[in-house]
Length: 273
Image (cartoon, rainbow, N blue to C red; front, side):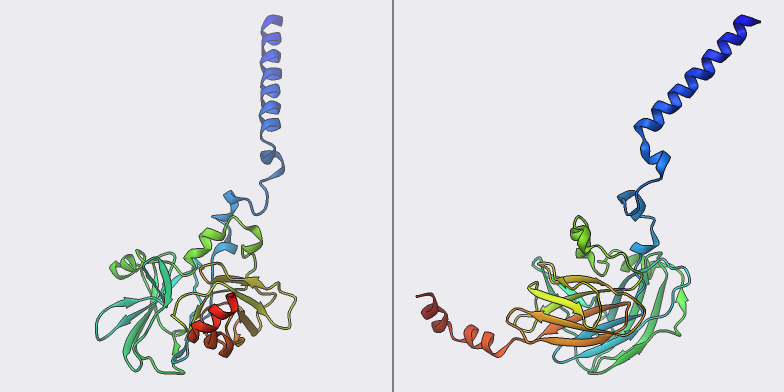
């Protein structure tokens, strides 16, 4: 009996020692995983984007898309515009020859607008004429279940797909509930313009430079209207009032001095001399 008791005691002590060694080699289990660690990020609600507006601002076309509240809170995947004339499915930006351009919508044409969520559900606004100042109000449109339409759209790019390339820079990662994401383009060739500084005026929010691909994300302090200011090298200063949760596609107009230099190559050569 004494031998059996001694054996059980030895096994119990051995188990305790093994448990302590395991915890020592895995401190995260004792203290909880770090906030913001990669393993948390995929399941964190902060990484899901819930915009209530999309703004499309070009020299010839200004569009606003008012988005509904999503009960499932899976987050917005992207916004799609389907031409009623050609049947082509367009995003707000276009990739061509590995470069990103602003989409050239046909002025006065008819489109079907689809807002796709990450869980495959979507909202469809059937008939819209794209003209300067058009407002597409989708807030009362029915959320439809996932089907072949959403499966096809999910094969296309999400909005802010370039943000994956910026994930290694913690200063550029959005952590707020109120996030503005967007792309800045140049009117010169319609391509993204990375040399642009973006900030929310009148707030303590830190401004940010766009990525080389013209992409930016700004965390906003609260759910109030924001005045977003954009200063692009060789371009005219721009500002726009937006909501605190939105997507922004905006074209910067070239400055007069930059245009003179671009249109007069002999001046550039003389300057180099």
